[in-house]
Length: 213
Length: 213
DNA sequence: GCATTACGCTACGACTCGTAGCGAAAGCTC
DNA sequence: GAGCTTTCGCTACGAGTCGTAGCGTAATGC
Image (cartoon, rainbow over all chains, first blue to last red; front, side, top):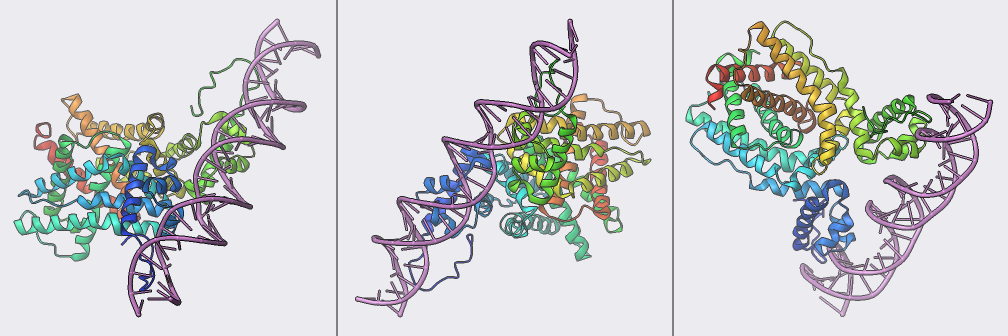
């Protein structure tokens, strides 16, 4: 899943799965204690109890390692059924905010996103392991709301795709900006206000010919 | 303005203002060519035609230098009067997106934001030189819309402050996420869709007892 | 047993960092 | 002008990190 292609060799000593987990956990620990800039691969290897060369055999560099370490933080994200679209959104946004509030996510995620502006492979890695799973939650939430009758079924699939992308950028961007730039907590009060604005904007736009914009 | 406190000494050789400009320009140039991680202060000094020691006398490190270099990019942001709130928002968001699309802004801004999660002084520097001027544009836009009668005058100043903060996080966050994470252009079509959702959300929320949320 | 791969360890050259020390230059005040 | 003060360019330095090579050993499949 992570690391680079070991090509699944059929012979020889297999790689230790425990080492992978130890390295990723050590990476998160180092992110908390040292932050992105002072994190060194040698230190991570020592914390994980493996040799530095072992780490380099599995990850090509600091960027890829941190992406995988941070991605695991977002694995716990899920979309609980709270009965209404508004409640569903508030629930998942609060989960997202709670993860982003953790120091290992703060210092690691933004740094690799910054690096990804000059590294297409890294951006693709981030997209596949972090962004796309989040976007799937938006898709699930929309489907659920449509089943409830809170949102009309989409007619134009391309238009629906654009709308999902817009929603995703608005939701994730707002929470990230609130947490990292404004450095204020995305607490329940803030999330309620945000969800209200978002939902009213979407439903009003939908009922006033969204496809005509 | 930038650099650290030279204490304004009354005597002795004054610092070269041209050197400051050359260093900041060289920093942006290095950001474009090398990106954040491969940018070294020694290289910037060489590009600027100054000694490395001169650079260290004015900036305490890479973080502070890049903040000042990137902050100048946002100086050109202004709020043109386009006649309506929607048009004003679209105009300033497009300007913001154009700046963020530049490689020196992409690679530099996110990196220093990431660093600021573990450095309060750096976050304050970013806030004062980059974030607050942007937020002032939101305040100007609201005042103008209120003068036009497009928005009601605020009653509770604390509630109004929270609303401005929310708008700012939504706008800036969405554009940043669209540009850096989704890696899609925040072009006119996207900005129109986004503005429509935002405005409908705000006006609907305002007319349906925003202070009661 | 044998081939193959992973592992831990050591050592290495290359690079960047941030600072110290020096003499020279450029201002201001008198 | 003389003298004081601060900045400037330059060189050099120890410290730290990087990523890799080489070696002997450990763990698998055949």
